[in-house]
Each structure stands twice: as C-alpha cells, then as structure tokens.
Length: 75
Image 1 (cartoon, one colour):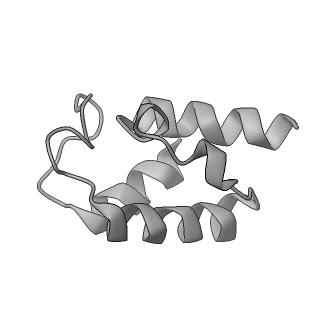
Image 2 (cartoon, rainbow, N blue to C red):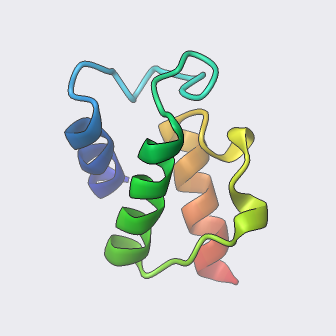
C-alpha cells in the first residue's frame, strides 16, 4: 500500500490519499491520471487491470485501488 500512496502522491502531492474517498467525483483523478495510474500499477505490482475493472468504484480512494490490486493479484 505504501508504494501505491507514493505513486498517488507523485501525481497529486496536495491530496491526502489516506482520507480522500471520492477521487473521481471530486475531480482529483481524471482520465489521464487513471491511465497513468494503471500503467504504474502494472509496472510496480505486475498486475494488469482489464477494461471492465476501470470503473469509478475501483478508483474512488487509495483503499479501493489497493483492494483492486490485491483482488487482481490473487486471480
């Protein structure tokens, strides 16, 4: 989870990703951010995120992104 926080902080240093819970709805993460994040996740965690998993619920918080990574890593 620490590496994920680091990736997110590099993208938006002004956001507290430990408490933010509506990253998509509040406009913190836009489409370009999500594409960048997916690329970073693939590189850092060796997890491919399929298109059907690219939904707001999976990217609304650091916790939901981490849960997605863990779930895909188990598959």
